[in-house]
Image (cartoon, rainbow, N blue to C red; front, side, top):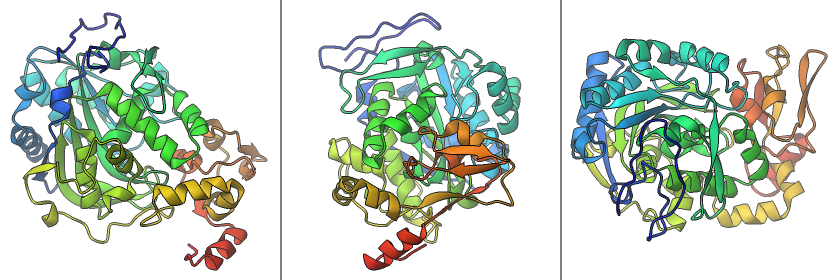
Length: 424
């Protein structure tokens, strides 16, 4: 299959090739079918150690030439969920992003750093400046001499091969690039159990598109199908994961830093996520996006088609990695369909967001991000209408003050006990 190239900033013309694959400029089927995952030990964020680790992770995959041609226009896409300091482990560490950018520049590429932060962060020049400054990306760009994106336009992209979503709105710098290189973070997630290479691509959708998908895709299965559709459409040429320090507990924002000590890389987002799941001591099939990829035939059920190079996974697994409070081991899609069929009961059973009064300052972030408008700030405090809440946990994810807890209601605890579960 031929790879379509385009000039930086030239409008992208949608279409599909004879095999039915989307002709995005960075689409590359033969690379993405190469399920090699490299794993390199890296103990801390010392800049030289990180640069050595990143280069080694790509060398083990066959070298950068295998994925990126010299002189290509590359979108460097870190996971910039929100304006958080690097030591919070909400975003990839600046030293990792710097190392990837350095590697690309040394390869002769033209690099632009861009992301659309999570819902609740304004997708505007002012909002982007705030996020870039807090996460250290502005200093990365300045030191490397690369561009920071402030173009907040986006374009509609048809996705005829999508199983769940047939059209996405995608930020312009992603469509203007010849290659996307993703820099993701190893983190837990209260909705999807884990966030990694696949979930990082959600940041290619402009700000308020994200809560609209939370509203439309109320079940985890549907949300996972949407994410896999997006990953198959956008196909980053290479994904590099900062797993030196991960986040455990109630990620992707309100968890705690936890050392894993690794840099992970692959051209296949699902293979990389499968390895991340093992490092965090998950059953990979408990991760909704991995399960969706398996059901589509994109990944073997036992990850037998994933070829590991570098360090042994077994040497880096963190056996007591703390999972989100929403995580239920062994829950599968069959059970999920049953629970969704009795929707009201499922809402009673599920953890619900509750305000921690002494921490809430009434900033209104939860109200801004809620896709169902189920929360309002009244008399200086957030208040929920649980009949409208779909348990997407966007409010918990984006609260800058860690003022929203996830707990079972009294009825939920009773139902959990009756059905043999353990109330949290």
